[in-house]
Length: 150
Image 1 (cartoon, rainbow, N blue to C red):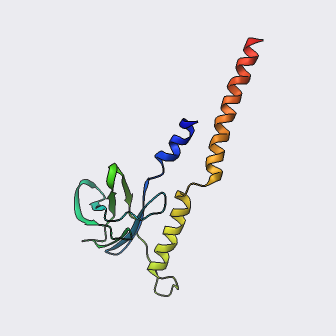
Image 2: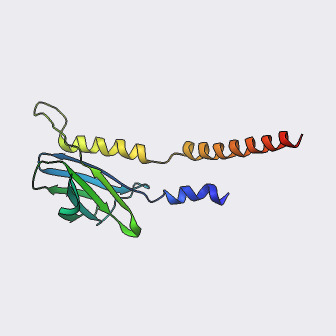
Image 3: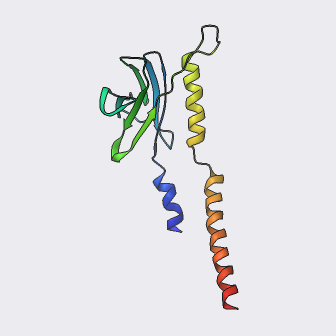
C-alpha cells in the first residue's frame, strides 16, 4: 500500500512554469503542484542555442511572478530553480496581441496560467484510476497463476 502512495508524495512538489514573451517583455509565473507560488526562486534566461551561459538572472517575487525585459526579441529558454533540487525549464513562446483585440496581455497570461494549472493539478479520479490499474494487474496475475496450477 505504501508503494501506491509514494508516487503521490513524489509529485506533490513538482515545480511548474508558465511564461510568455511579447517583444522584449518576458512575463511568467512559477508555482508548485499544490498551487503555491515559487517564492524568491532563481530565474535564469538563456539564449535558445546556448543553455550554458545565462544572459540574465533574477528571482521570482513573493507571488512567484517573473517580469523581465530581455536584451532581444529572440527565442529564449527560461529556467527556474527552487529548493531541494527542483528545476523547470521552458522555451518561452512569443505572443502577438493586436491592438484591436479586446484581450489584454495580462488577461491572456492569466488564461494561460489557469489552463496550465488545470493540466498540472492531480484529481481524485487520477488517484483512484491508478489504484484501479494496480488492482487490475494484480487480479490478472492471480488469475494467470490459478490457471497454471490447474
